[in-house]
Length: 145
Ligand code: SF4
Image 1 (cartoon, rainbow, N blue to C red):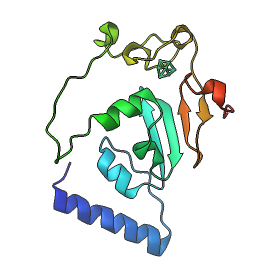
Image 2: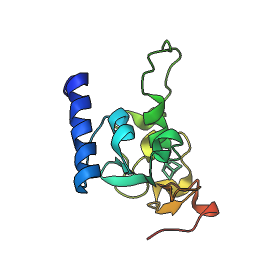
Image 3: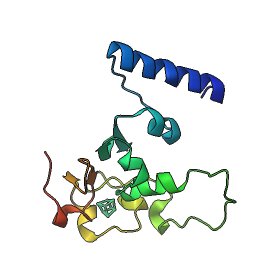
């Protein structure tokens, strides 16, 4: 949470160290904008679970998991006035799901019966080795371990 010019300088130093010295970074952030700028590989987590993973920035430009879709949709755009409302399911107030099943169940507009009883695995979807942990994609994909 540093100011924009200092943040840009830090990211540039990290890129230089990566490109010129082969140094890798584990960059943990809530800031999707800088994650988009710097990441070669991205893991999106919810309540300690990886819900989406991808090489490059496809997870942020074409998010598949409902949580990541909501995250990306909530990023303010400087060229657009904020309009409309965000509707959450009635039981979303706590933000916590039952200890079994998908951790995003309480807040997911697409939840199904299986979501409350079974933890979804990461499955490959689309190109670029993009994966999401969501039952919406299990039928069309090969499960990853
Ligand atoms: S597994 Fe179910 S509750 Fe979890 S994100 Fe997918 S549709 Fe929503």
